Length: 201
Image (cartoon, rainbow, N blue to C red; front, side, top):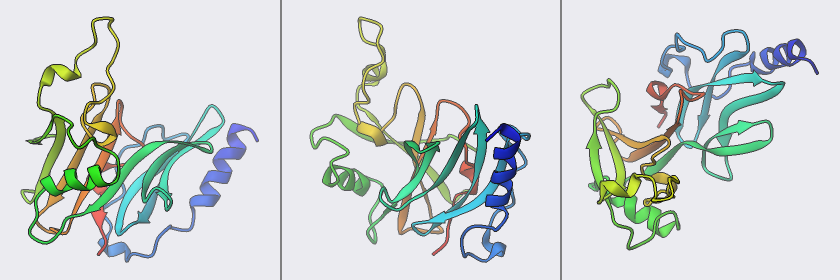
């Protein structure tokens, strides 16, 4: 299938809006695109959250962010290959703070129990006053630096912690105190709009 054919297929595929949430609850369609000629926006839903994500055609391969039930998160795909988790929700027990997510990550095997990591509040993007951004980062900032051989180290705090080659964080909001949402924007602008992430229930 050539690029024009893939583009037509993509538009046909995305024509019916995905998900079941009332459109009144959706944020507006983002006013930017990675490539207006080969990308289209679609509202995606899964795990009690929704977001605007792009489906694009790059080098005759369909790239997209969509819900993956097996991984319980929105993933970035290049063709049939899952590149990684893009957005994933975590339950916050009643009255708990972001620290409880560390315990959850340890229980799921995503973080070593003795990992020298701490939670830090950061200001990453303009956001409502009710929103907070948190990163799980090494207690020693030097741990993110290159090795003596000039290599990029493995993330000390695991796949959900800060990285020297990508933007990862958790966001919480007083409007939905029952959850924290992990966001991996990667090294460049992601194929989803982080500001559009919306809890649905």
